[in-house]
Amino acid sequence: MNTVLDIKNITKKYSNGVQALSDVSFCINEGEFVVIIGPSGSGKSTLLRSINKLIEISSGNIYIDGEDISKKRSKSLRLLRRKIGMIFQHYNLIYRLSVIQNVMYGRLGYMSNIKGVLGRYTEEDKLKAIELLKEIDLGDYIYNRAADLSGGQKQRVGIARAIMQQPKILLCDEPIASLDPSTSKIIMDLIYNMARSRNIACIVNLHQINVALKYATRIIGLSKGKIVFDGKPDQLDNATIEKIYNTSMQNLIISGELNEA
Amino acid sequence: MKHKRSIINKKEKKVYTYFLVVVAVLFIGSTIFSKYNPFEILLEQGEFWRFLTVDFFPPTLQNSLNIFESILITIEMAIGATFISGILALFFAMFGSEYISPVPKLSKVIRAIATFLRNIPALVWAFILFSALGIGTGVGFVALVISTFAFMTRAFIEVIDDISHDAIEGLSVVGSTFWQRVFQGVIPSCMQDFLAWFLYCIEVNIRASTIVGMVGGGGVGLVLFSYLKSFKYQTAAGIILIIAATIILVDLLTGYLRKKVLL
Image (cartoon, rainbow over all chains, first blue to last red; front, side, top):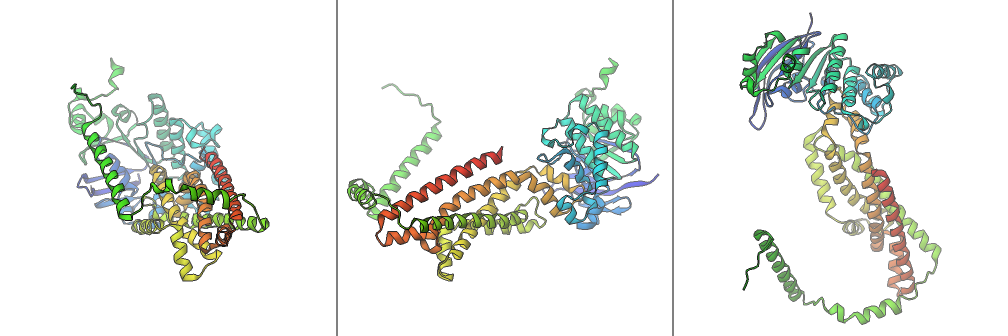
């Protein structure tokens, strides 16, 4: 198994004094589907955003495919970022533009500056994008404006954009937090299948423990910037959950229990 | 006496009362200081109306071909200056917006310069440049460019700062370059607002170029000024009417286009 992400003793202290991460370390191998859970403010987003250097860490090292991203700047940072796809809670699309234009953006990192500026994508890439859009049932929406899509459709465009990067790692920052339950399932299935079929290591921030249990091959529990749990989903017991969320089970909504009733 | 209940917040009432007092004091004070009684204008209206109705009437046009040509020059100055300013402003705004600028420190400098330049009206720039470089259409043009450029840079920076930062972040993570983000993300997201500001500046500059023309920038302003100076008031009145008509037409047109653009 190849290690694609190696995080070593990273800390992050914001300029306002908030200690978001303290001494976090873990490794992720090819094909793993890791879900990070933890209460708001526990550092989930900070952790995810440090991996592609949207946030600069205070100390420690993050190795992407063997290369330390915390040392990278400008061009070499861009080249390394191509290997890291990201899916956002708010989709982060250019809403004035068409679905396919947004998907093609996944190729920008592979193009020369001027070709990217002019949007001169190769025919091969365009065909690939169209195939991908058909695969995720957006074949009829290729020329629609991204603004006119539903939430679930927007997120699918976001996923397609990330996949176009041919990433080694997929970061998903609360991908279903703004979606209804049925759309959430479609999106989680899609992320899971895309990552699995392409052997992409996936890290997903989630608030829903039942969703985490369903998809994850491994769960990391974060509390106050520290890893308090790192293991297989079946190892996650009530005591650990209470520890992660720093409260007792009766104060938590964990909808998985509905099925048992 | 029955006590009347106030429905206005006591604090607010106080503020408004003080405000009224201050305005009244300022008015009386400045009237005494400048020894000019604004009410005189009401008493001296006879002369004013005589001037308007006798000297200015009927508005006529001599040499109308010349005048229309000068109007064309004024319009050209306005559109040309807006166009050049727009391109310059677009470039500088990309570096002036703190969020997308590749050199965030530069953004404060650009903002400061634009704010400074913007606060000096085009007319003042015209006077400064005329004393330095002499009068002429070219110099008037530069005066318009300076003030429009500064205004547009500020406006464009605000447009860029207003768009969703999420969208640009989505482009950053794929490994795009700064110029790719600008052309693929910022410009498509902001184009409508940029165009709306551009049209607004054309509107403003038609007026400004007339005035800059009067003090030496050429165009219809200068023609009007020369007729006024040579006491040919009737022709001057004709020119004023034509200027007004032109400005109204341009306003209507740009207003219509702005609505279309912002849809």
